[in-house]
Length: 300
Image (cartoon, rainbow, N blue to C red; front, side, top):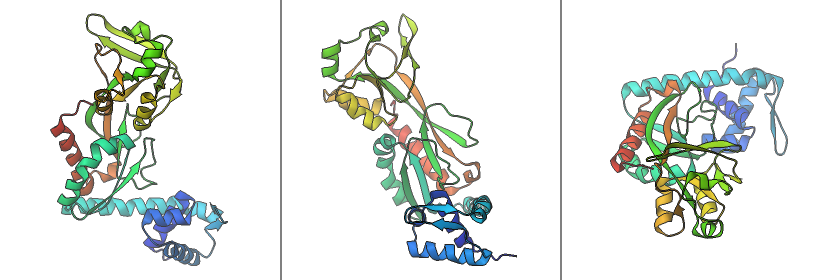
């Protein structure tokens, strides 16, 4: 019978997930020496090496690979118990890890965080600027803000205000290539899109109904903040969230293309694992974000 310490198990699980003692120490907000000692203690308890270390890499031994899923399950059970108790007590506390795209954080989340932190002094917020799907359990993410249609991930989703997507291009690009006045005029232009591959854009024009065009992007950029810079530099025609496009248009750095069409929208969801549903810190954060966005009545 092994006497496994939870702190040591958590350190091992993070090392196994991140393939690095240094990265695990940063993720756990612990000194690297403490994480190394936790690993050494755990290896002493189980009586065998759990990882093999080189100058740059960490690889699980057979024993480590066997222990890893059990360690994750134990940690998840402990987190679930803490979450349930925290929700029962009702006092938001602890570290809240939020994953969201850079542009969304910069413009829509960051402005509400100072007031949120002041309202909940026992909550610590760690931002993960990421637009990709992540393993929320393995990476200990509490809330992920994601744009676009959801896949069946087993996560709980709460809808946030949708974003209007405006079709834009730089004045220099339109001067050189011509300004489309109809959907058909888009043919032959250079496009920028979030998706690498042929996709279909839909336009709803008053009096004409829905029109569709298949586009194959000349450039692909999943992060709108980077796409904004590319479009202002003349990369082509692309769609940006309204909250980003309006400022550039007002400054004369972008022009809205086909403004007579109704803007496309993309849905936004706050995702969290089902066992976080009772977490006070998750609940108050999503409520605060929804209220902040609702108060601004964002259309994009």
